[in-house]
Length: 211
Image (cartoon, rainbow, N blue to C red; front, side):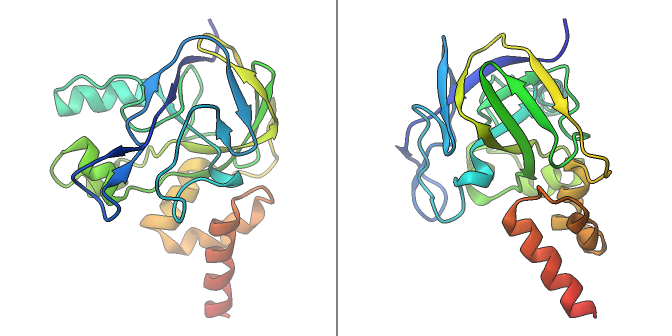
């Protein structure tokens, strides 16, 4: 079987003991059946921190099942689908190697890779692992944020059909490194027209400062 969605996951806002807001919807759980997808995300999926999460450039978060399994092996614990706060747990697609602007047809939706997830206190608190933010950063498999080009429905088991791949080589992995550990890569992000606005602004500020 080719690339497909292994699980679709959504979460509701709950009170939590970590993070500044003490409220989060990072605890995503698998849902059955078709789920409607709007430009702002999946039906039934809530966002507590609208300042740092959500919006058109963070509508859907995808994480590879293969990477989740690698983490489970390293951490010595079970990691269920949705454990990393992902909306789509994928199988058979190289999420880290996907290019910014790459488009995926999933169900009746059309999604576009546009940004990456960077670790925060909420993620660290939820996973409850020592030095989690640093370890996640060092591993460099952040998962991808997708914008919704065409709303529709998707469900677990749907194929992921990569229908367009840009000619540039700005990948999810490169964007993550540029935003976290290798700031000299920031100018490269400007080669990807579809890169998320926040990442583009950081790249433009870096280039201006170096001029």
